[in-house]
Image: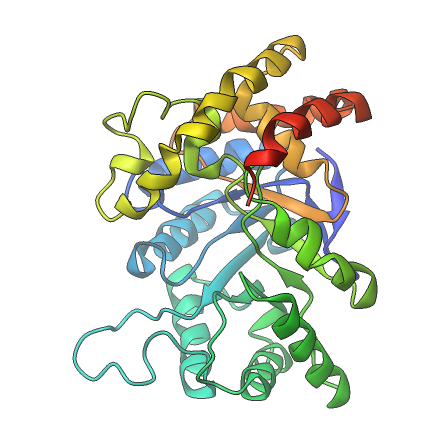
Length: 326
């Protein structure tokens, strides 16, 4: 496992990391999480991604309990969380959901710290943009979170390049803590934001990327070529919004061609897809997901595929996937 700087910060993150979306609490309990976290750390992973909204806060609880049981030195691991959707969506929901205002953010960080059992969280993200709150208010609140020692770095997730730049400029103008990283979706069939929209931000402000969904929620494993199998992510309650993308005929039809390249490189289709995302030098870390240790091991095997992705191989992959990418 290699380590990369998170943007222009001095923080070193493993090129592959482990996330908890969908799996923790829903498919993975504390004991299983502890086993997978230990396996990942043993392979060199040092970054573990989470969010307040995952499983209604229970994902943070599971990860926090697992980390506590493992008794890792705090300097050895990096954890994240994200804020926007909120948890208490009943009754008077004002200032409790779908917002990035100061009141919500100042209380959200305290909730995450309590659920994870930590004194501080390494990376905090604004999980989505909030057009109803002035960006300046959000920037001040996130910067204050860091000044108070509750977080170390802050960034965004699925923000436009224009909004990221606006946030950075506000922080620069007022000598505040600047956004360091963005967490966008990035895979073979979803790439224009990372490769085109954000292009100037890498040099202009030193933006780092912690990308998610390298397997397109499972499509790039090939398991959805004949529909949605029982027990898969697409079959889980509340995940119906993924089905249209998972069963896309054109993208599924391209998988056998990608599988030929994977076979030539002696790797799985999933490993090829993860390695492709990590091959981008702008990506600080690729967040992987797993519900079983065997799946985690296969995903982490992508590090051995990276050296095999020569310019010629990358060109063949792009010729197949690029026409189908958004």
